[in-house]
Image (cartoon, rainbow, N blue to C red; front, side, top):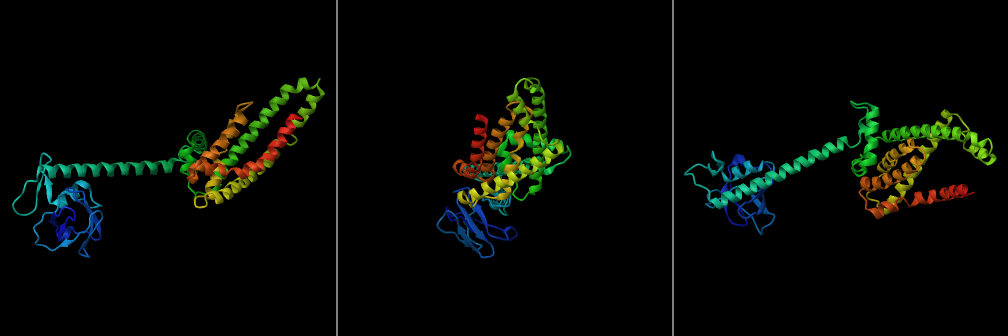
Length: 341
C-alpha cells in the first residue's frame, strides 16, 4: 500500500507486514502534517489537513521519510516508514530495494530533529510517570505500616509529612483506603496528647500547691483543675469524645462541600484529612503554648488538606469550614466568658 501525505503530497509504499492492525497516526516530518490511516478500511483520515487518501501500489510519489507511528520508538518508526537505516557515522540512507538514493540534507535534518524531539518528550513523560507513581506509593507511610522499619517509624514519617509537606501528602490520599488506618493514627495522637497533657497538668498542680495553701482562690482554682478520674478512665472518655468529634466535623465539612463542590467532595477523603490533621497536636510536648500552637497548626493542615485532596480553590475550601465555625463559635464564647470571670 502506498501512503500519501495529504499536506505535501509525498508518498511511500508500506509493505504489508508493516501495516498496523488498527488505525494509527503518522506525522510527516517534511510538513509536520499528522494523519490517521487504517489498513483494513484502506482510507486515511487527516487530523490537521483537508483530505487524505490511500493510494494503490504503483504510484511513484515517495512517502515523507520519518513519519512517526504511535507505539514504536521515534527513531525506529522514522527509519522504517521512510525505509532508511543509519550508516556508521549516524547518517540515514535508503534501504529500500533497488538503487539506493542519498537523502537530501534538509530532509535528513528534519528527520533527525523530529526524532530527537519525540524521544526527549517520551523520556520526559516516562520519567514523570515513574516519579508520580513513586510518590503515590510513598506519600503515606502509615498506610504501608509496619513495613520494614516498623510502626513507630511509619508514624513519625507520617507526622513529618503532614506538618511539613501537607499539600503533597494530602494530594496523594487514596479515597479507597480503609478508614481504620486513618482512625488508628488519630487514636494514637489522641492517646499521646491525653497522657502528655495529664502529665503537664500534674506538674503544674505540684508547682502551685505551696502557694495555694495561703491563697483560697488559687486553691479553689487548682481544685477545679485537678483530674477527677484516674488516667485509664480519662483516656477512655476523652478518646471517645474526640472520635465523636472527628466524625461530626467530617460530616459537617462533607455536607458543606456537597453544596460548594458537589462533583469533587468525598467523605473518605474528608475523613482522612481530618484524622491526619491531628498530627500537629503532638506539639503538646512543649509546655505552655504547645497545645495552642498545635491546634492552630492542625486547623491550617485541615484547610490545606481539603484543598489538596479535593482539588478545590481557596474560596471553596474556606466555605466548607463554615458549619464547623458555627458549631465551635458558642463553645469558644463560653470558654472566653469563663476565663474572663
